[in-house]
Length: 179
Image (cartoon, rainbow, N blue to C red; front, side, top):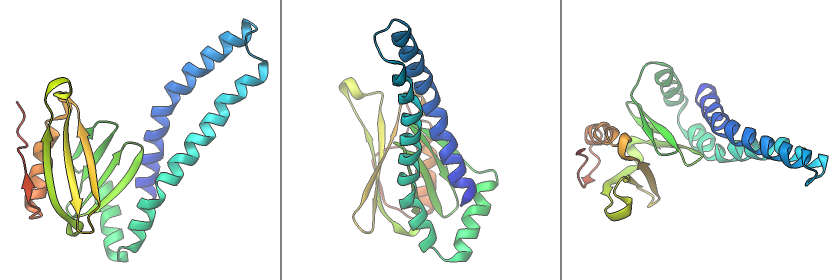
């Protein structure tokens, strides 16, 4: 679990660093021009701390779900994660397709979706202005649904999802083909 969380935190940090650099440059310019007080530069470290806290809080659902699994299954997932496995890029994240679960970093949250908890899957291909976006809607046995989005260049990963969901006998609606 530690490696999974470490990779999640590092990915979140990689997404945050360019934003912090741009804000620091803008604040530095405004401070040099005399439009902001010097103390305004403290906004960057404060923003970094808040983003780190948000990443930690958003991973608590993953930690809780992971800790409810039997110890043997936890070890199996951790071992399989360190081995080569398919990882599919998505909009704002990626999904790791393991043999018996999905580990998804999507929209700044970390999700653990065991195969036995998935009841239904649906591929959605949008039209009009949003035709470059496709989504995979996963619905669990408890009724919760998860939306995983793919941009135009990432739609090739939908076929990998279709294969693994089919192997898990999860009913699939829609087409996962890429045009």
